[in-house]
Amino acid sequence: QVQLVESGGGLVQAGGSLRLSCAASRNIFSFRAMGWYRQAPGKRRELVARISSGGSTDYADSVKGRFTVSRDNAKNTVDLEMNSLKPEDTAVYYCNADQWSQNHWGQGTQVTVSS
Image (cartoon, rainbow, N blue to C red; front, side, top):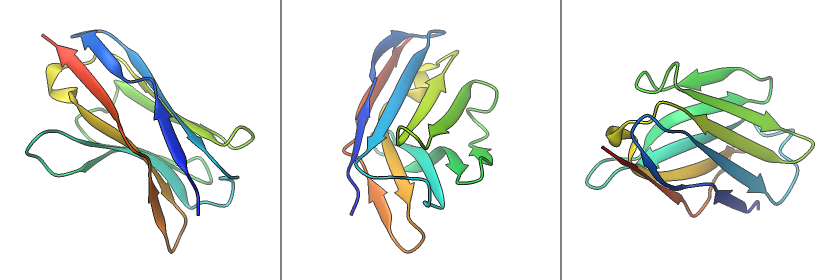
C-alpha cells in the first residue's frame, strides 16, 4: 500500500500559476507511472498529466503547453507546474500512482481559478 498526499492547491486569478506536489509514503521508482487527474463539479475524473518510470509524459490536450509534470524518484514526489491557468482548470486535483496491478489515489486538492 502507498499513501499519497497532495499539496499546493488554492485560489488564483486567470493567467496565474500554481505548483502542486504529491508525496508518496514509499519508493516510487518501480511504479509504472505517476500522474495527476482532476474532477470538476458534475464532470468525470479526467487525466491531466502523467509521467512514466522512464520519464515519458502524456498530457491532456487542454493543458499542453501550459502544464508540466515531473517526478523525483529520490524524494518520492511528483509535481505539476500549472501556468496560464484558466477558469476551466478549476477542479479537485488528485495524485495517482499506477503500481501496475494497483492504482492508488490521494485525497485531492482544490484548485480554483477566478476570471
